[in-house]
Image (cartoon, helix red, strand yellow):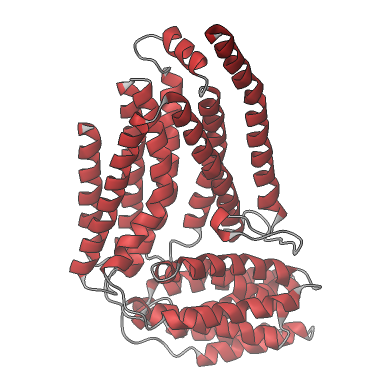
Amino acid sequence: MRFGRCIGAFIIAAFLAVLSIHPLPAYAKTTVDVSPALSDLNHVITALQKGKSADHDFSSFKEWWQQHKAAVTKSSLDASIQLSQDISAASLDLLNGDRKQAIKSIGTLRQTLQDYQSGLYGGTGKSGQHSLSSYITELGNTKQSMDKKDWVTAASQVKQLQQDWLSVEGDVVSQSQSIYTESEKNLVMMDAYLANPQTRKKAVPLIEEMIISLKPLVSANYGLWDAALIPIREGLEALLVIGSLLMFARKANSRPAKLWVWGGTTLAVLVCLTVGAIVSFLLSVAAFGNNNSLISGWSGVLASLMLLYVGYWLHRNADIKRWKAFIQSKTSQAISTRKMVSFAVLAFIAVLREGMETVIFLIGMTGRMPASELIMGIAVGFGILIVIGFFMLKLGVLLPMRPFFLLSSFVVFYLCFKFMGSGIHSLQMAGVLPSSVSDALPSVNSLSIFPSWYSTIPQAVCLFLFILIIMKELPTAASHKNQKHTKEA
């Protein structure tokens, strides 16, 4: 436990050290007037939609860009980089004569300019309460495109909304977990609906719901408990994984296994802090793009697969006779090196998945509340997590062998099911998997059940395997129980 306490103290100290510093330098207060550029781009899109040449208007836009590029870069480096990328993509599509793709890329370029104008890339958008307000403005622009039945532009704008979500999700989750989960789900569903001409109109009530639910959060003030709840909420699932692994290591009396688990946990925390520092001092939350969704997605799926195996192994060893045979068949090390490495990898993935979001959320709160309250909130949050972890380990040791393994296996299978759903949902947010949805499927946010076959089928497979494992072990348990009754008789 001494090693564990040292790691816990180190984690808190490191988080406080990174987050006590304001993450981003002050942005220039002035932005460039982009009205002429937006007018040119609107003419480009209109010309392309009518099948006419758009070369003159796009050349006019590029002249504007050359004249104002330095000023835009001075006011927001992130916006300048993004605009340069968007212009290159649009120029290539126009050069290739791909009219349909050119309309999409010009729409993306126009949205980036609108984001810059509304402050999402700089100015007041990073220093006050305007970031979420700017995102709502962006939602309003997308709704206008839907109302005009300009579905191509709306689809491009929703893609941009998914990328920009990372800039404001910390604001949302700190005030309402339910609004955060529902908004993230709506972003994926809107993308899916707009991709199908038969379902495009279904996207309109979803964006209206997002605007209505997010507006009350714009003027909200943050406090100590807002900061404390983020590490508690994000860390509980990782704590359940680590706690189960540590309790198992204690039952097996394997000190090396404990060190492997703590080693994986520590490495994940260091990675999260490193990424947090890079985002804070070198990039920005907006520039981090969809990488967080990719990390969350792939780590969720991988953790789910590993948890499925761990859950099977724990459930299998709920049989006392088999557990004793396992211990007796090993050396004093009790657990093989390969299994200990897998414990470390699982702890690393679980903490990386939750820790990355925790760091990004907390960075989003920096500068929006007094630094002393933020630091105190973080300390309280991690303190509560440590207390919960302490009691978990104590109660786990007191539990009899069979109830301990059965309880642990059910917890692990629950996390396996949830990580699979949320992981695939994150991959859909990142654009790795299609954002297809089905009205025939249920949606339960608390269990990460989303109305998509891409997530529902893998979750159904996990559930089927879980039931299969239980059914397979029932005859063995009944046989041992009968043998015990026969001996007693």
